[in-house]
Image (cartoon, rainbow, N blue to C red):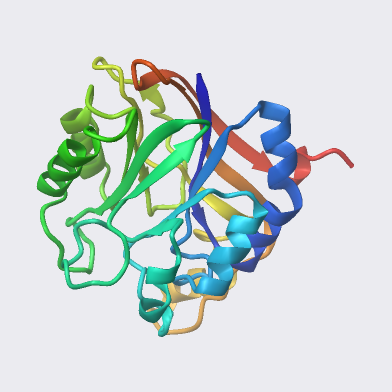
Length: 265
């Protein structure tokens, strides 16, 4: 069995600091073989930089995926090609820099990993996520023992549709982007694990990781204002996935919701 920790969107410095301080303890306690996280909100809550990506890697994350905020940090387009452990969404235009998938060597097992962006209520103009997923699954199954697929999307229906579309062909389909963990973590009838959204790694005393008063104010009066990253009740959310290396399918999956209050004093 290979045990993987999949983490929801890392939000700003609080999320990064939590991983630096506590991720190694969680990995040791739970016998985790590798950690994969979405890092699209890691730099100031919007986008990522090479510096923050390296900081996350040194904290113990082996692979970083991204989402619709991939290019929010101005210079990142010039940095991404040098980050071999980072992949951008696969259905962005082919002219975009960066890798559209990763192949990880974990304990001698080849694991394919890629992300697609949803198209419903999302800003970037992208290729069909379903056709892109089909293409990459066909490509990666030739060289990988199993595949992990992330769908970074707004709507539950689009994520669930992707789950059923890939069921039986990949070890897990997991959603990100909404920063709130869903209660539908399970193994589908074809043997693939599925969760609509992993949640986030960051401050839960917040509105999706942002300052409460600023966000509530925007809803109350509609006026534009900055919504800085919040700081209270920091933790990490995601799931622990066990995969049979021979069959390449999920054996078990469980929720992770580890917060500062859960840590030994």
